[in-house]
Image 1 (cartoon, rainbow, N blue to C red):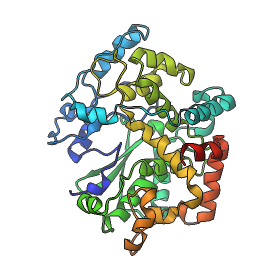
Image 2: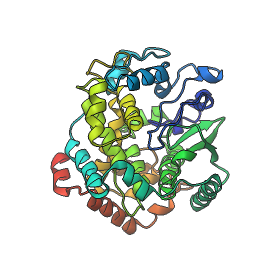
Image 3: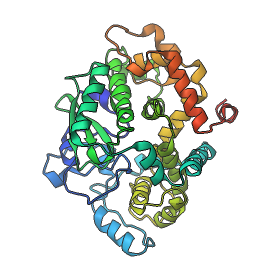
Length: 386
């Protein structure tokens, strides 16, 4: 449908909900939080969309009350969540199985960080740098949009209320990037822009120019889903040019989701304490893992879609020597497995490649650096992904 190319796994919501997103203050929440669970439109009185995206439908209505009860119970209480509309079982079941395929890699990545920095909090402080004032965020964003030739195409907003680091939505046919000021750290802002604009937005633009721009044409060509390639690529680009490109967030999400399948909310909460001290941040990860459930004392059930980041990252790294990354981006929102099949059908005029991918040799060196820093074992990956 209209603007369908922007529809992507996590942070895109139907237009009507974009307004509802910032409504209602959620109290101070650490900026290390995740891409948040959007607030329903009810709060702002925006008209409800006929089919809210999954993200909105899965945000509990009684979130703040349950958080308070949980914290007051010394983290023993099992939250009981209520939703606008209970999710159809089928949707949740599709995502209900956490995989353990890359568990060793996930734990290994986090142990690297802890060995090196002592705690996640310290890692964020040391490698993220200071939180930027508004004026510097604007300057950095403008500079980045110029680098990618997107000035005037993407509307940018700064917000104090967004719970994630950033979110991109299409609002009245214009791509709009909202950035959380609290999470805009000097060394991490650029990575967030590479993720949202350099990857999701540009691949969306390229996809729109291709013969497989519609879901019907994708079906006819028998294309694989864009994920996990799409989120894997965006996640790699978040850390690509960092001196210390740790894949912490993707790893912790993967780990949390794996354990959510056989633990209650409070068990999960205490289980991930090994990696995250801050209880507010831990609450966010557990909430994300258990969303869609009403009674969180029941272990089975987790929203395993969040494993897509690490899953995609590791598949791309495993095949990094034989993926044509420039072509992958040019072709739009396609899986790395479909590149050879689509190469000869592609339209190349007006497609764009992000500035950091133009030199493929340097790009590969960055990927090698990511593998080295995270102490990933190439042989192990080849074994897991034959």
